[in-house]
Length: 361
Image 1 (cartoon, rainbow, N blue to C red):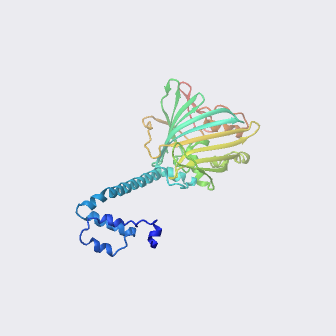
Image 2 (cartoon, rainbow, N blue to C red):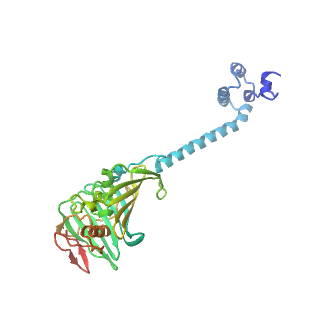
Image 3 (tube, rainbow, N blue to C red):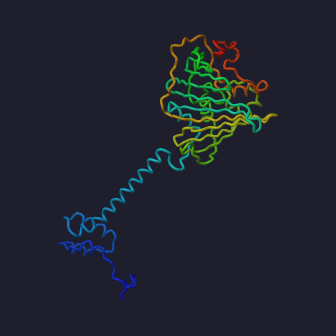
């Protein structure tokens, strides 16, 4: 028994090319004699030669195997295509986002919608809550619409760079629109506040843009979309407008910001926790969900509404609960319901119709 027989258990070593060229066509024996029939590359080359010959018994015998290989290759291509599609939709695995880029991502998308809920806790007990929803359009000088629900009070605002429109919403529907000019005019961008107070989504992206150093908490999906979870510790002063009269103690109140961000740098969810403390162990939690990036906004500006008077863009009108918290902190009072139209340095709010107000700023 020779060495080859020892390796194969005494059986004759199989020769795949013998099967392949069983027809013994002219020239194949000479081609085969010059090559090692045990080399896989030779077997592959032989298969190609066999497939190129006219139909015959040998090719017919090999056709099923060749079809199996073809089907396997097609399945592999399909699998790769599915993986590529999933990566395009959800982002590459392990891709890191960057909260400082959320403002740029919002600006690139031009439009998005949001839903915000504000909750005030005394210890672990929920005391008050308010909600807002709206749409932002960042084309040109920008515009946004917000619908606010604060206890039994509801209202809607549309803000442009040079005008603001307001209407109250009661049990029997919305009242007529009222409008005023904005002086000075404003530019609505994701790099500064847009008049939404502590719950302002554009104010949030502006704060994130100027405060690097968020720590990664790993990957966590949001409503089926892959996202990176980040947290950063700030203070209340980061959310207040420049020139705020709040004391240093109030500005130093700790705030934890958590964001969930997808691979295109767009925010999907954000939670701001204002740890107010005090004898009531107060905490204000503001949660915002971001949706419909890049999709057309649906609100219609009431251009036919006359603009009467002028006012400044108030940074707290759209966040009555946050405004109430800030008022209590600044003036040392208990929280109160914040009316839609508040008294300001420019005079009292004007009562219109059935108890509705248009803010006079």
